[in-house]
Amino acid sequence: MKNTKLLLPFAMLVSASLPLTVLADGHGNHHVDNAHRSEANQQRDAFRKPYQTLEFFGVKPDSKVVEILPGGGWYTEILAPMLKEQGTLVAAHYPANVESEYRKRSRTNFEKKLADNKNVYGKVVVADFDTNAGVDKATMDADVVLTFRGLHGLQNGNELAAAFSQFNQMLKVGGKLGVVQHQAPEGFDPIETAKKGYLPKSYVVAVAVAAGFELEAEAYFHNNHQDRIIVDGVEGGVWSLPPSLNVKEDADKEKFKKVGESNRMTLLFSKR
Image (cartoon, rainbow, N blue to C red; front, side):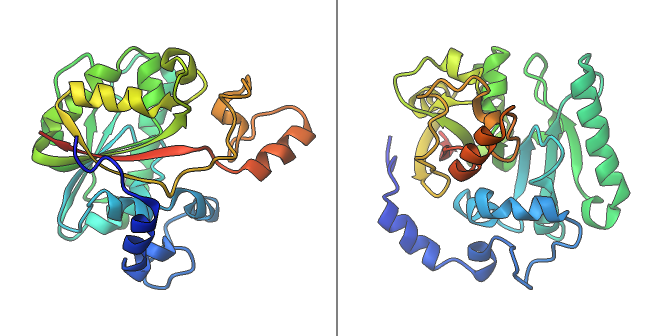
């Protein structure tokens, strides 16, 4: 694999040259219109660094981008305006006919979000993402495929290898796959860490390589070395950290607030 390490000083140098909208991550920046986003969602920009992340993944205004399992549409809120004029955004969500009530509700709520603000989301294409079926034609010939903090769920469903195979099929030759995922320390069993929301980086890379990808670069701006959820065996997993703070004791909430959001890997793959 080439260029598998993006050294921190170099990453900082690159960041210093990025446009203002990237550095500011839309937070308090008059060049980015956040009127359609809730204050709660905007507050998470400080942790998720969406504009810096999308810049690193090579998303451009004229890209065809497939967002895998967009959930409630946090990243869709940012991608849709960015790609509206020149590009294409395909939201590959749970299938409309899925049996799970939770997944069905997630898809329905997402479609309602789009329908309620056609000025922002009117050009978003909604497709099915189902590892047990063929790749939805709407997702094909993409420049960039993006997956944010969802690989552990695919692992838990024994779908990770099939998912990466589909990511590869969606992309043009040379297309890019951007991955942000809660990162477990090396040496831990991915089957067990996935139950708590985490995966070791080496495991994710191995699955990606087996599916026909090459690790092109890595960024570190989502790292948080105070996150010891896996090392300390915290029962509630990543959901003990902000923004969920799914813990019973107030003292634990204060402790995990100080930790901040999870330690995350940020990996850029290219299709071989």
